[in-house]
Length: 410
Image (cartoon, rainbow, N blue to C red; front, side):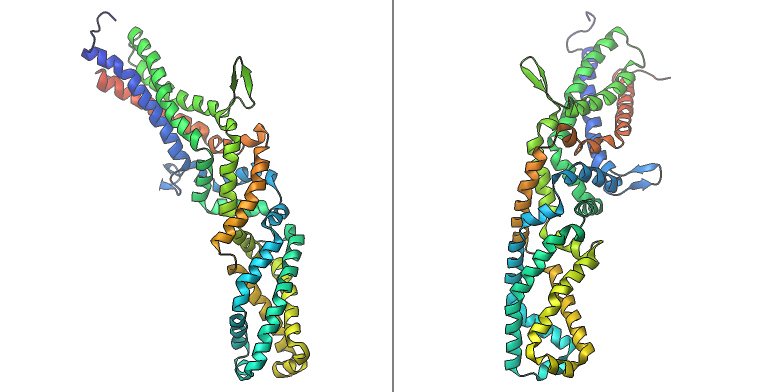
């Protein structure tokens, strides 16, 4: 290098090689992460010209893999429901609905039997309000306990979580991004210094073998290698390995406790909320069972309220009308159930109870089981991303050869 004077144009040409290699490594890794998550919907001309983020494009499959790797091992819906606490649930239903009992009764009766209801004396109405108010706590308690005993047949826990993640691509992205935040930043940042190291080797090769294609080929290697190395450092070795005073293990695997907290917080506060669980019961695949259960427990309230006046009531509205009234009361209860759990504070309190048990179990997963939370995020189209990185590195090497070193490809 005696013919290269310090700070001469030739010196800066050689100095640019590791710097550009560092930028290639950083950009290709950054682009790989962006292409993993964005865009949420396909942009371009199908089927070949365009792109959709790897995770959003395979949201159902990614949701399946994430849930099978975690939720399936973290607890059953029975355990989740018990952590929510049926007694607390019943108390909440009663306390949030009792103040509106008169409103509910008026609304139902005016809709079904307006003439009869408007002509009833105020004292009779008051007696009916009181009967409903007195019966409600016992009725709700029995209903919630019955649901608790049959909850496995009323809701599919894994199916519920999968459905929500598959439908909400932004939430699915958030789950992976939050859990793998440090690993994604490591991939991007490692591209910078790994690219620089490759660039130093590239500089030496260019000095010894200044071939037309050495820079493009080295750019290709940088684009391929930085991504591949970063991925392997994240997940390998799978189990801790002692080498002298050092213990080596994949970066993601070493953060199991931290990631467990993040994952369980998102799942319990965004998906396994009381509101969503009740909605899945009432509108999910087993909704008919849930609605029948509610009807079974609510119908007797009509008999109890009618009391000794039942024969008179049947005369006034007829046997069919009386049967319809029972059904309408049940439907009203179902409708109220769908809106009764929108209280964010109540959902948050119950979510924290569920989060604790799920987090403990996730922290106890083996490394083999735990890595499957984030690994699918990279496995899908991983080769495609690495090849794109290599292609960009190759093009950057060609540009460097032509514009920095004044070379010609012809």
